[in-house]
Image 1: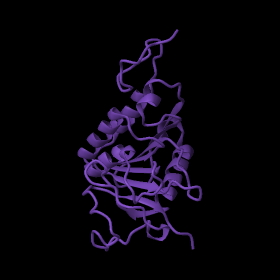
Image 2: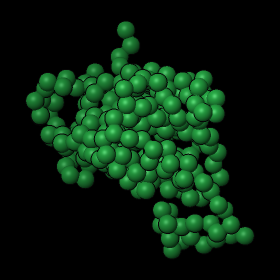
Image 3: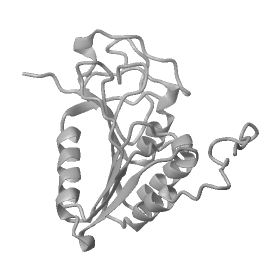
Image 4: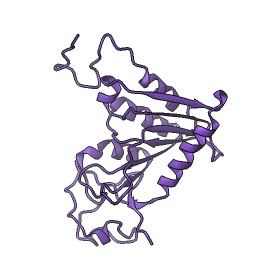
Length: 225
């Protein structure tokens, strides 16, 4: 059986015979985060409106949201792209976004996970991990796999592995600017040695336009010693 979804946008189109539960799994985890808790997000795509709304709502109630991804095209985080709209929305809401440079020599983030760390702790207590991108097509159309992890069901080792790996990747990026491509011209391409600008430089020091004000930053991989 086929379904004609040509008149529906991905966020609203559904397949009547498929009853997926990935939205509920992720929504329940995000919604369970309280003020002072931290949600750590791994993903390859970051565009699903309902998921972004859940995360901005979480930020609004005092949840710390951290996102680690690989920068979409263009490949350097010092240039803007319309495909960064989701990351920019989270940044402007007060979340923190770290982006690895999209080059062959840098780590590529393909993981998809949501990790919950309670306020005042460094240890995660729950997590979701699977194949689902935070994109409408993945949420609504695809056959995906995902698993919920919880301390109450004996998943401590898996949760610790997810949390520790995220923390390692999070620490491998340094701060640069998220560019709002809808609000200003794209800055010019800069040499690789300047891809992580000095945060103390004044706007225009690299010959580009001032960055959009937002509540967070992106990053590129730290230089290797």
